[in-house]
Image 1 (tube, rainbow, N blue to C red):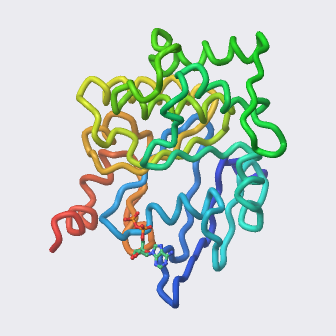
Image 2: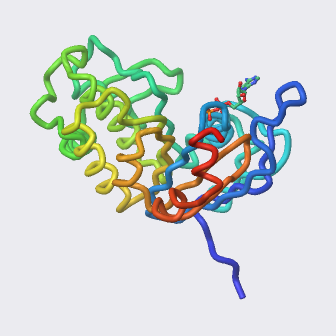
Length: 247
Ligand code: ADP
């Protein structure tokens, strides 16, 4: 019978930096419409895993299948086109543009082939900007300059700039770092809205937030999986308790 089809299948993934295996024979699988959270102590390899998936770092061996396509030999810009979106920790929004303009230039047709910023003011783009602005709680801020947004709103705007490209997998690195309690709650709501059409892979340290959002947690330690499953399962796993308590 047919093996189950995963949105993302990472198999035996390894990357060595001068002989040091930051990611070591790692395999994990992400379903459609799943919120997967990667946790683990500093240096566990979490960021490197996202770097490998988005093509920023090249694997030494192993495979990354996304919708059946092998990503490990693709360039970063080709990987983006397969539907993988990545948000880094520091916002890369355009401070001197409005919220509307930031979303508009992120619309796939808003960029010319030379990468210059062009403004495509057609109705379809406008509608999509409004749709995304509503999703990210910024529909009342469309004409505001991005530099006037709160820290949390800037993070949402950057998520919106990825959402407007309609990725099938959205990867986020500590999305609620520095956010207020109410912004955290709204971010959880946002993630639950957007997985109707995609999956989300998140690196997160805030365990309360992980409890709120994770369908499944992958615990990394020294480039390998220490434990995997529901938050309830992994937080009671003695191996996880040991690593986090530092015994
Ligand atoms: P985490 O995100 O879990 O804190 P990282 O993925 O950033 O961990 O790093 C895992 C390990 O790999 C660390 O020991 C780090 O120093 C090392 N590492 C990451 N990137 C590189 C690199 N480009 N060159 C050398 N070592 C690296």
